[in-house]
Length: 298
Image (cartoon, rainbow, N blue to C red; front, side):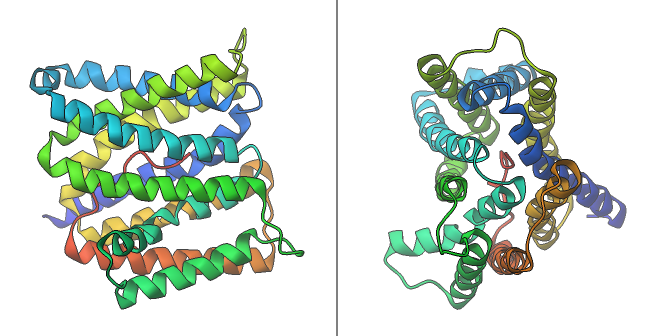
């Protein structure tokens, strides 16, 4: 890879990570004018339509196994977005950003549990740092846990499951077709949940339109396209470090946009979560290029 292409790739990935970070505040604002399931459904329906227009020829290679894999991965991805989006109604964008990032740390833990092997030293260090950080960030003075933070933690668990499933199925199927299918599955399930439990607004407010404008194409469809196009021009280590910036951008936009303020204890918690994520990401990046971090953000 040339130095110029690597710099361009790093900047493009940094831009994608920034968009992912910004989405937490944007989605939080949008939820004041629309239900979470309808928002997710419309967002992913737009992204699915956009990617289908670009990759419609890939559907000629669609088979039963790929369809099954896309449904399984999409269903788990839906659970993650449902927990996260509903959770944003009860917590801050800053907390949501950092807690969502725990998915990176949870992946080696879940892998160890499934394989019935002890986690490696780096995984133990990362898990320990992230767990202490999560406690400092989320626990109240009376040691109570915020409801929104609890939901977001289940989102992180779901994202970890999604990462593992992508790692399992992607080598056997067309990764582009698999990504488009899972986006479509999220759209269908979300719209069905919205039709069952929510009322679609007669008209969308400005925050709703802004939320859909930023999340549907830039944060979902274009993020996927950019990542898959440029990631081969940079190193796995660079990619891992850049992706760590997502919760940092979430906290920064939460402060600038929504006026969120973290206490010194919460900032220490955020730092420990970042350290845990960094240890987990850099360890994994030595073995393989991160290829399952797409579709993140809020």
